[in-house]
Length: 217
Image 1 (spheres, rainbow, N blue to C red):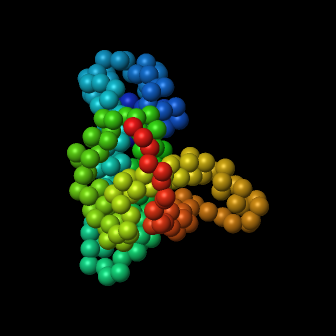
Image 2 (cartoon, one colour):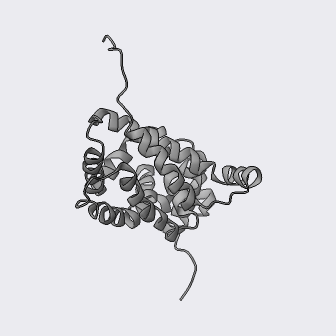
Image 3 (tube, one colour):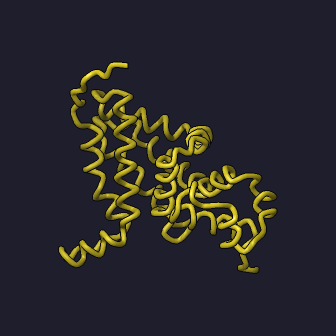
């Protein structure tokens, strides 16, 4: 069996690296084709457009990890006195399976998700909710059970704050791990850092509601 990559795989691999490093908006199809050593017609043939290429890059991770995440979240349905840290903890193992897709896949996956929100890639939100809406709905139900005092709009904000913290941490993982080793003689891998951030995220999402001053429109 040949280990040579197909043209489609070469395009996906090149696009993934460039999207994670530069962002979606700053990565042109011309740059992708140059990195993949293919012509523009190949991208159009396999994907049709840049938006569909972006979705295909994310789909490799989403299609692999999301069914496992749904299964893990469903197992919490019968849990009495459910805590938020248990909800977030259930997501770690499915996220780590992204490493089976690509080397360092978990970090890349979270970086790509973060890029999608930072750059207002609205089509990605549509794509994720359309293909994996059941996972998001189950997550919302469990969060409501674990923190019923938090309103839906605050959950919206706090989950985005959480995503921002995760993306920054994963993007800076190598540097942070080096500092922890040098200053504290502590050695970490991606999974240990994800588990370390869970109490922080759970406390933030379940914190008392803010006292807001109404903004006149």
